[in-house]
Image (cartoon, rainbow, N blue to C red; front, side, top):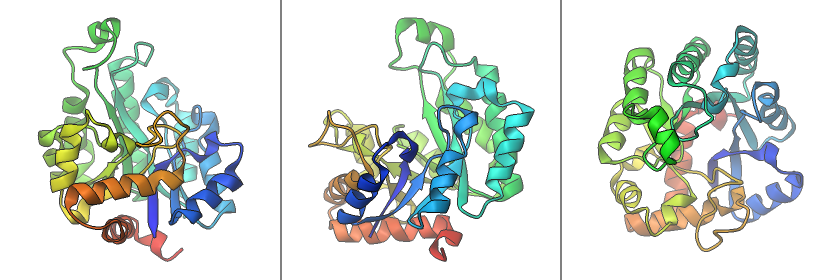
Length: 275
C-alpha cells in the first residue's frame, strides 16, 4: 500500500475516477490538502475526508493568501483543526517566488499565527517553502536579499521546535543543509514528482541518503506530474511512479518503499492508523 501524503483533491471534477485510479495503482490512502482557493474554501478537503474513508485532510492558509489570515479565518481554522479527520495544519509556510504574493511581514505573521493554532490542536504541520532564487527579476528585487528557507527555519526554531511536534517538508526541494536542518527540527521529507526530473540532482542525492524512517512520497496533484507522464495532469495514482523512482535511487524495491513510507506516515499520524 502507498499513501499520497499531499494532494489537492478539491481540484478534480471527476473525483470518483481519480480515487479509483489511485486504488488500482496501490495508493489506498490520501492526505487532501485543505487550502482551497483561499480560506473560504479550506473546509472542502475535510468535507471530502468525512465522505471517503480513504481520505484524510489538512486545513490551512497558504502563504499566497497570508493577507487573509484574519481573526475570523484563524477561528475557522481552529474549528477545522478540532475535527479528528483533520490530521495536520497546512500547507503553510513562506513563498518568496510570486511577485503578487503578500509582503514578507504579512507572510511571516500568518505563518506564526497558524503555528499557534497547530500547537494548540496538537497537530503536525505540512510546510510550503519557495525561494526567490528562480523568480522573475521583479520578484527577486522585491524579496531579496531575504531567503525563504533561512526565514522559515528561524521561525520554526523560535515558534515550533519548542512544542516538540513534528511536521512535513512538502515537496522537498531544498539543499543538503536545509534537509539536515529540517530533519534536526523533527520534520519528514516528502518527495513529489519533481524528484524524477533530470535537473533535480540535488533533491535526488538527498532522497537517496535521507534516513529511511523520515521519508514520504506525494504527488502534489494535480501539479508536478512525474516522468514519464510529465505534461499531463497529475493524479494520486502517480504516487507509484515517484515511489518507484525513489526505490531506484535508494537501491531497494518499490514494495520496500511503499512499506517504509506507509509506516512513516502512520508514525507521524498515529490517529490515522486507527481510522
